[in-house]
Length: 184
Image (cartoon, helix red, strand yellow):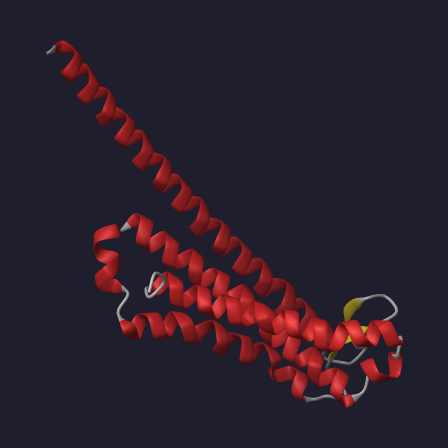
């Protein structure tokens, strides 16, 4: 009832993606770490779990960007936000992060060459030494993550600036009202 708005649905997307990341850690990383089974990590199942983890991780990142954009629009244009966030627009904001996350895992379908796996000895997700990994790690992972981070930071800083400006205006109005009241 309380979160049946654009922000609530975007939080649902973010929460589902976070749940997926946590599930891969609980269902895969913890057992392989306890058993110290390196062969299991690089098996086909281990590669698929790495692919699923990349899917959920990128969905989390892109959902966070959607939430930042939503917050910016709602704070900057409060009267127009209700009209802007129709069911269709909310659906786009909800689905685009998942579609982009699916695009990120496409190269990992070539399991023998390109994959991410959980290394139970170092406790980290690791790229294999395949021919396409440099391209994937650089462009699909680093540059896109950097771009999303810059966009989120920009939207969040603009939102904070707008809130600060609104606060200054309300402080100015309050001072004027107090001066008028004190004169009377």
